[in-house]
Length: 371
Picture 1 (spheres, rainbow, N blue to C red):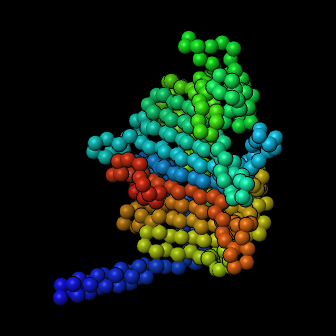
Picture 2 (picture 1 turned 90 degrees about the vertical axis):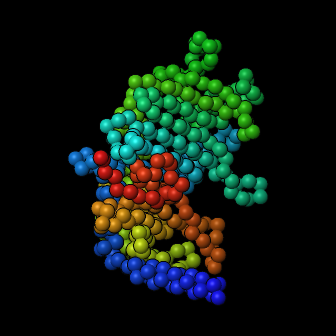
Picture 3 (picture 1 turned 90 degrees about the horizontal axis):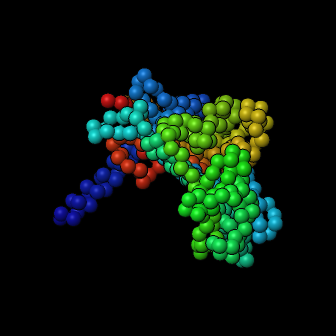
């Protein structure tokens, strides 16, 4: 008897949740969908010093870029090949005290990790990632550490070819003088700055590493510097800020297999916008930015899906851009097997004082107030 009662209660709860979900689902008009996107963009990069709200500074994001907009030289083949996968992780946060009060006037940390890969095909035709190089910036307190790791040609850590570093965008020359410990030093060709340099042997072969520590620059000043500018949230969302209503349409949006996927819907705490770019957008992008259309996130896309996390009116209505996905048709598939290929995504967290550490998800959102 108890089992039947429990089963009935479970079924009743499921039905209630289903009805609640359906009741909370709302379809937006094209005008409403675009307005929601623009409002979310504004709130995502907002910094309101007077109101003590620091949403533009407090975030964590992960990005994957497979658009093949860069090329690097492959010394093993003597050819330039596309860099088709670039991963970036950025963590930028304010100091939070024991009472969970924000202190954005204090020194906060900034961390960047950027990995670049070359995508190649192996002997059986499968696509694999061949490691290229990575860059790390880590700013805490009044010290910034920088390191860059890249493949290095040679037999061992005593016999290597320094010129191969140039193939991976490392513009440096060896300093003939050594430091007190007898370590080789690299001089940046552009600035003359001295870097520490070492060579390690890994399962992938030799790897070189440049290292530098800069004292006397605060984490806040570093986060506002030209070095960090390309990694800021404002930079990553800048193209959304340039969009006009006529640039996107929710009509006639189909995936690679021909199914309709377009629309703008609100369900519980998530607004999902799925659209395509209208004709002539590439030209309009260039007119607005002066950049080649290949640097646009959205040109040549099959469709774009942007998710907005809704905090709600009772908590200030601070909707945020939480996820961006850009799709093209997978060139390796066709017909009934046609598939979408995700060529770009960015997944954003806006960290709140109650989280205490890096989140495990990418769409947690809080409204942030000081004091």
